[in-house]
Length: 266
Image (tube, rainbow, N blue to C red; front, side):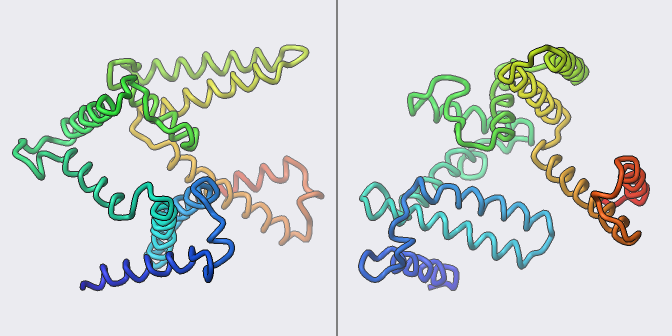
């Protein structure tokens, strides 16, 4: 047995012991698909965070946590008799082989753009086979909203429902910003309409990123990090001057923010 197979089998055994109704961990035993779903999402984000840090040891550690989540779900399914870990592996193997006929079959190797379209055509055929005939079918409602927006837009674009020019999206963003401004100036303000207008503006921003070839989630992660670093600089400088944030004016903080920008504190 290879070391990989040995360690996977070890982890499978650990998961089985944790779920043993008699001798297992009380917390693990009481979990079900729904209760551990938030942890699965959290672990996926922690993998992304480790990748952003560039720390290979952290990536290894977080991938282990995510792998445990896969085994946890598979163990719950096996206990109820719905499917096994082997079924999970078999399903993804079949899917990957089916979606790469240029690698596992006789199809000619496509270029990147052709492969992307080929991939979408195969996924469409898979949806039809499952009775999911709508273009937007099978895009999970539980996905993070920004990622789901990208998925919806890409799927619509695959049949030609897309802005041909990025400048048109920028114009649309200005239009949505104007509508939001008008709603903000309405008295009394309608919270639902404000929510709708903010959502429209965010949706267009995601579309702009997609059209520019930028992953909006990655862009926002970078922006969050930049904001955090620059605000930390503000705190540090204020503390060095023996002051507190509550004692500082907005002008004081803005001046330090500009200093942080000039210093490229990203």
